[in-house]
Image 1 (cartoon, helix red, strand yellow):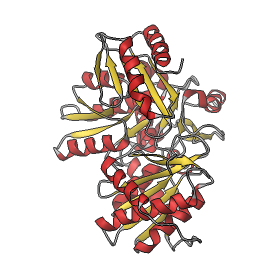
Image 2 (tube, rainbow, N blue to C red):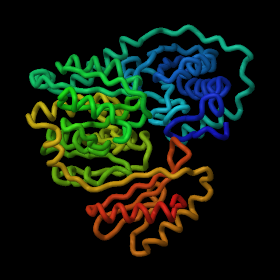
Image 3 (cartoon, rainbow, N blue to C red):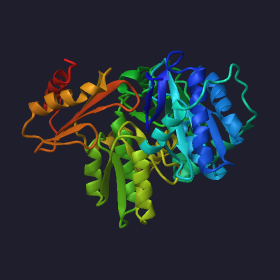
Image 4 (cartoon, helix red, strand yellow):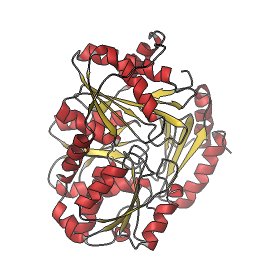
Length: 455
């Protein structure tokens, strides 16, 4: 289990190596103890994405949960945001989504969630989960999963209804958009096609085998479909459908950062004259800050990790402030639907933007601030070496202002910034560079990568 990647972003491992039936049983048992201490009569939701290992991991998790006598509701293959949303009407005390999200094969894992907040575990709760795993005895020789209630259709239907309530459905239907959809064969496939059909869209499904993360380099098949089928928009998701990337009518990937900027700009227009807080993490494009400033709203910055955003949103809302936001990885969070990233909400909002402005998405995006940005990953087998690497990066730019909101951040007089931090989900470090000057971004990225040991 030492090779598992465990953080408040969940548990992820290599199937058959660090992630086995025994591992799943141990985590199921530990999560059961955590839930039982909060609510002995808990209702617990279970769901998965489409990775083949999800079925037997589900069986092992259920075996770990079985002795506690919970009411177990199986949602089947659904997006992570569907699980988070459905915790509300079922009053579920807990939920487990079997997914490695944007991680590539052969990864899989678990996202554990707690009610009534309907958020993934925070750092303290994750530590409690890990302590429970360490004191869990050997698993049984045979796994016998308990009976569960099938709630797949009810969950998908309820989630779609809530998303549709957030937009002007009639105006989108009247626009008659043609949309290409690349869900990577993941959990978003069914609900996304249903959502678009109910919004009156002509849908072009894209069957593509690709890495889960919807980065531009992974969207060639979607771009071809948009171009050849003359689509108004292309949408791409990761395997658990919490991330959304867009492709313009020109068959050009817009980059995952633009998803959040576009959605937030649109939402801010609804709340003119109200106090609004937009929550983002430290790694998100500052183009979002420019949009928020133009609209007279306020930025709230958090560490990377969905739970940090969710908690910040909850605090603002508790104080009577209108709040929404997300992450620059294509994650839009609209609390009226769910307290986590939701690609279905993102899709509906983007289509409402296009219907209202009656302009192609390339023209709409061209009106938004655009700050050059570069992201890279560096293999990181030993996190103990991070401080030495941070020191080498810091020494490159002695005049920059350094702080440690999450990893190491350097901020420059002209507003440019560099962030280096360990990933919560993979054995890598992430490097992010942004500035108004594309040449500076390219040159700085190269320097940082060399100093960080990736040159």
